[in-house]
Amino acid sequence: MSDPSAATATPVPPVTPARRPTLDDVARAAGVARATASRALSGSGSVSPATSERVRAAAARLNFTPHQAARALASAQAQTIALVIPEPDAIVWGDPFLSYVIKGISEACHDTKYQVLVAMAHPDDPPAKIAQVLRPGYVDGAIMVSQHGSGQLGRIIDRAEVPIVHIGRPWGSASPLYVDVDNWQVGHLAARHLIAAGARRVACIAGPSDMSPVHDRTAGWRQTLLAAGLTPGPLTHAPFTRQGGETSMRAILAEDPGVDAVFAQSDLMAAGAIRVLQEAGVAVPAQVRVVGVDNTELGHSTTPPLTTVTNPASDLARNACRMLLGVLDGVDVAGVTPEITHPELVVRASA
Image 1 (cartoon, rainbow, N blue to C red):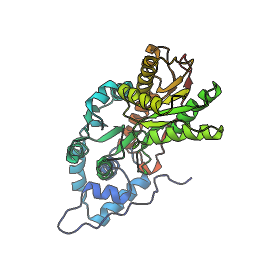
Image 2 (image 1 turned 45 degrees about the horizontal axis):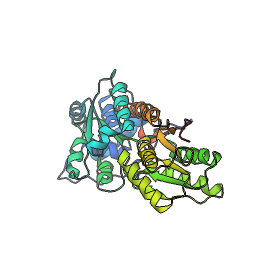
Image 3 (image 1 turned 90 degrees about the vertical axis):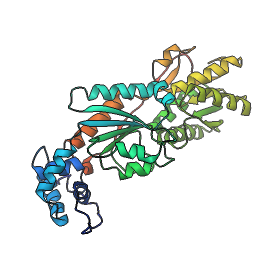
Image 4 (image 1 turned 180 degrees about the vertical axis):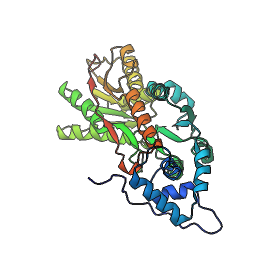
């Protein structure tokens, strides 16, 4: 059986005489995480012989000496994990999904040596603000949730010198370090249920267009309708908020008053859509059926109770923590594969 750690080394620019090689140079040259390189060079922790040999060979090529490795190892243990949420405060504290993620990561780290630092990145924050968080000595690793493709955050993540695990498939990145729900299936399950219930004009209230989960959920909704011989109804994009659902529902009714179903890509959005429909005198589900996403407690408090597709925030948080802790403990990134959870439809009275 081949050793999964025998991955192709990532090319690293030659180190000029003006700069001494760093542990990060060695890690990049060997194709491993920084923590793995530290353990391999110091002889501590669990690192496979093949990985250890690859790291030591990279260190020799770069003239990185063992005493440098010992100092780097001693200074690298911040015993802190950052949870980075690039959203405004109102969304972070108002979205039940994100609340479950924060709680799940806190619980997953409770019995470990790591403390959790929550870092919220506002849209107008300078890039250096988050770059300062994602650096060795400040944190050992990070978990990223709710990443957007626009802005400069993606470039900061690519340059980060600590391992980063994403909750949600990262936008524009080939990194295998992520956990997610099968978001195409999320859209498919919602659309299939609405079609089976008799809906023929199904609109979609989607989240921001620069997020991978939104792209995948929208594709699942659209392709399922087309496969059934139906033309997709109006599509809107808005923040994952109740207000976003309300604004989108008003726009959809103005564009096409004949819609008979709505797939809203979060429970918050669905609650906002139901409110607007009822204010307009449209009965739910008699005239318009509504399906949300997340299966949060909010779904029990809407009138009628909300049909929704699961997006298990607590499970995703625990899986992300387990993946990151594994990398920090020496698991070779080259052998890691994304962890994908299958969603389920929860049928209640709204559809």
